[in-house]
Image 1 (cartoon, rainbow over the protein chains, first blue to last red):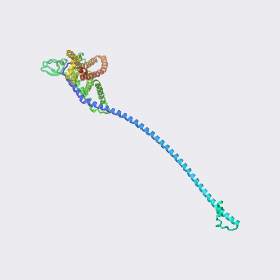
Image 2 (image 1 turned 30 degrees about the vertical axis):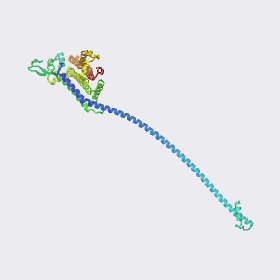
Image 3 (image 1 turned 180 degrees about the vertical axis):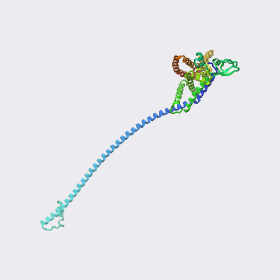
Image 4 (image 1 turned 45 degrees about the horizontal axis):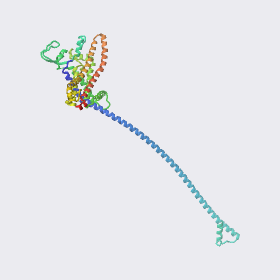
Length: 156
Length: 308
């Protein structure tokens, strides 16, 4: 338990170990620890950001889906409307065509009727002349009595 | 040492004597009766011889174990530091990082100044002192007996716990003291350091009063300054020395019959378990106080400066 040179030896040893630790142990260890700390910090930050991105993407996807649905509904509605329109147009066209056909048929009928009347009239005129001839027992000069015949025919 | 062959006093004394290597003068009568014809460098064979060697002797066991354990610390930590990666730490690396991180946050709390040396010093102190204290838990007879067997000298002195040698603890405290003075002077200048010693704690602001107060201030400040390293070294020494002493006393009880053996076993176990706490705590206290002293050395009393 004497105080001797060991005291100085221990002091020098102490300082030597402190120096060693200061130079070769502390800096790399703390460097690694700080680097890891940094890594963890950035990792956490990135995770948070990724979470936000995911949330954003989800919302966007939902929006797009909704929009698509709306568009689809709109398209279907438009198609329906167009179909009704087409049907209506077709109906109108059919009506018009029918009317037109009716009118044409009527006109033809009228024409046919007129022609028949004309024919009938001329036949009646001929018959009347033949009757008058028979009655008068003379030949009526057709040329001489053209006026008369025409008058007759007009009266018929 | 076999308890049966010697008295308990001899046993205790033998365990408390370091392996001193020093110079004995010519004409010195050695422990075995021989007289030296000329001055010789030799190992002390008795406590008296060790005392007669004076200051110029070294304790080979203290220095050997402390340097060896310091090298264990350096090797272990520098190996871990070299292999360390910023990835997921495993095994040794995570242990080393745990200790380093603990010390780092502690030093950041107690030492607010800029000095890259203080934290590594705290780490060195904590681990090194802990390892040295840990030797206290090795049963007191194992290593001395092994050393005696290896050297072939049954009376070889061999203390395995460096921190039970006041030279070791005061030596470390002395180095801390030197650093305290060095940093004080570096931070405040020679003049600032002297002012701190002479114009503190009593200070009136009037130069003639201050002049009168200088002797009192100087006395108080020097005592408190010198008391720091001494209390630092003696605290560690005292705790470990007392612990070692109890282990030696328990070891004596092992020789006292079957009952003594059983009792000593229980006592040894109890004391060892308690001592695990003591050695960790003392290493921690030495480290914290060193850091606090370093902070005090760096601290500038701003209020005081303004008064000048």
